[in-house]
Amino acid sequence: MAHHIGISGSVILSDSKLFPELFKRHLPHIEIGEFQDEESFRCFIEMLGKTNKSFGLHSPLFRGQSKYDLLEKIRINPKEAWIQFETEVERMSRLGAEYILVHFPYFKKETNGNPAEIIEEGLKKLSSLQSKYGILIVCEPKLGFQQSPAGIHYLDRFPVETWKKYGLSLCVDIGDYILAAGEKAINYIEKWSEFVRVVHLHNVEYQGDKYIWVPVHPSHENDGNHHKIKKLMDFLAKECKDVFFVMEYTPHTNPPEKMVEEGIGWAIEVIEEGSVS
Image (tube, rainbow, N blue to C red; front, side):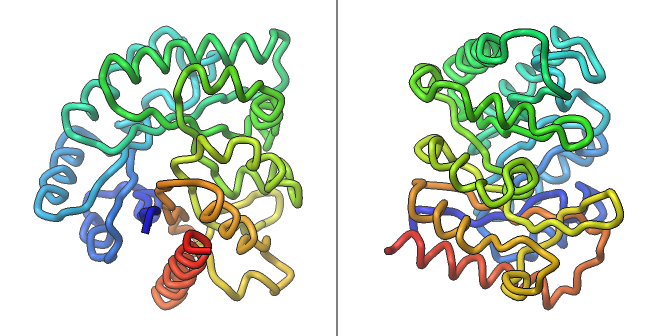
């Protein structure tokens, strides 16, 4: 199968005491970031070394570091954010990670500048880091403050030819795309299908004005409370090549183990069918 199925460290909030939970899943790939500290990261790398699983880093490496600041200051100065990111790229390249994933383009809200120019400036830097360290850099466009879809809309209007010049990959976060584009999510993703290398798979559950990522499950397709995502998964499995489909959800809803297992089994089935047909 051309695609890879993985699990995200978000399911245990990267808690080192729960690493065994992550490793017990019979999935060939782990994507993780925001470790508590150096010791916890080393412990993860050691456990990984005893398996034949691959891994990708979801930047930042450590909790509390820059997560969104490459294009504008959210918490720290972009200059410092780029220095931090380069350190991570260099380190992941040495450790043989499959890729390093970064939130890009991220705009907290509409920008006064020219979004296409701002994005291209960032792409130049990312592309030179990718060449310098020989590791795949995957860009994950994100919603901004108060679910602002600005970044996702700016990317939608960004020329594919320009993106192509820089040779960078994309991550589609199904939740963010559904929140930004609703039923039109596929139209937004279609244009970028040749660049998609990572997909974050989850559904969205609303609690008042908050939303949380929950595991995918076939029962969500018709329950009226969740988004239908089978069509999206089908599309991604058919149209994109060599993708890491990463099961991503947070433990807040405490999903029953049986539900998680069924959801993973269902996703694998849909992805395998899609990649064959």
